[in-house]
Length: 373
Image (tube, rainbow, N blue to C red; front, top):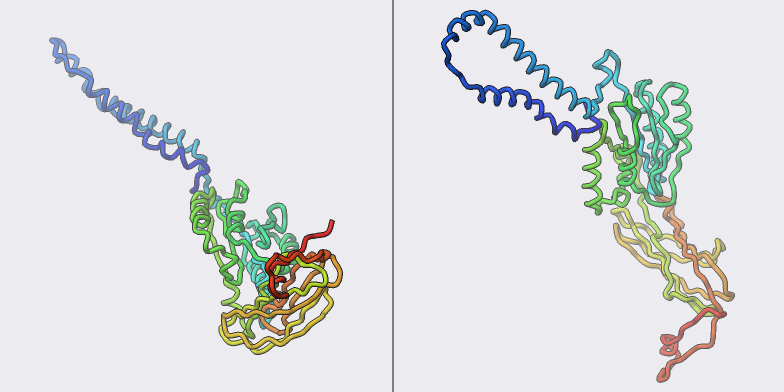
């Protein structure tokens, strides 16, 4: 049994109020001896037992009346099994669709393994259970605006929705997704909720550094109006496949904040080997607006280490450009093998040299560009 207004249960000690009043009233009674008392005692002796029974029954009814009032205010929810039926629950599939879920496995990708696991779970659910699907990237999004009952026809609809889920190019927010799943409104006839989280276990998606957020979530979970169970499925531990490593282009930056036309700039790509073993040498391709302009070979990168690759380029005309760096290597997560940077190139204005500069290198340090009006 659960209650919608648990605070009223703190008033249950008031059930003892009639009993306390009864005992207190007995203490105030004083025995007064008078002459005719001995004749009355004999006449009322036969009625004493029945009178006491009625008093105790009346006291019990008063206590039960107060208890019933308090429980009614607390709004109890009884499982349907108590009334001869079966429990009606709800299953919420929280599917991590971040970029890391596009990682390859023997049977496809992580996101495909997640959707297949959810489809397999549907066959195990009762036809009375409700089903919802929640994706996590870039923020929690319901696949359907309402609750879908798990009968055969609706399960076909859910299967199609699951098969259309694809990995995004960003991160997930699993903590926000759990908040959304636990706090979503439920049907009055539901008495249990099961939240199934399907993820590859990436620490960044779980926001493990947010201790305050997780403590607050635990409080929200404990105060849930219905019984809620959370189950986490680590797909990286259940899927088979030999890893070929993952090297990512984490970012592309420039050596200056303002770029002038006909002025050389250096683009810097930060590479990260997320595997434990050393990565072999590979090719990098630099592009401007998707047009390949330069290729270079990077040296092997040790396991769980980073490296940088530089490229010097000169923009001839002002405008908006996209610099891209792509790692030409087959690995577990191809989606993070490329990174881009949007650059605004302005007209080069006359060079302003600070007095005292003695050579061109020193002049370059004191040179700045401003956008032409």
